[in-house]
Image (cartoon, rainbow, N blue to C red; front, side, top):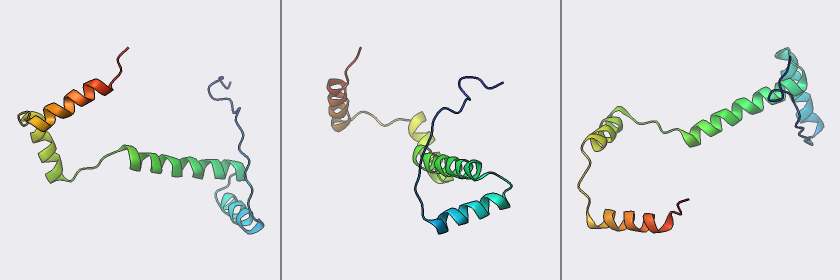
Length: 95
């Protein structure tokens, strides 16, 4: 039984030319899915990839080593860092 969280309640309407629709229908049929299921699945997969590209950082082994070293052995605070921290404190509103 669907829960309120999984019940489909939102709609999207898109306009497209006939050739684009034919392509999508053909791809959907090859995937053994209804057109709307196919478009939704492909759109969500693309959205997930784009989100991951923007929200995840991948470091090379050398960069990872430098990152860990900086965490374990942070440099001493210099004047510019102290100034940046002071500016940050002023700009952050606390509840």
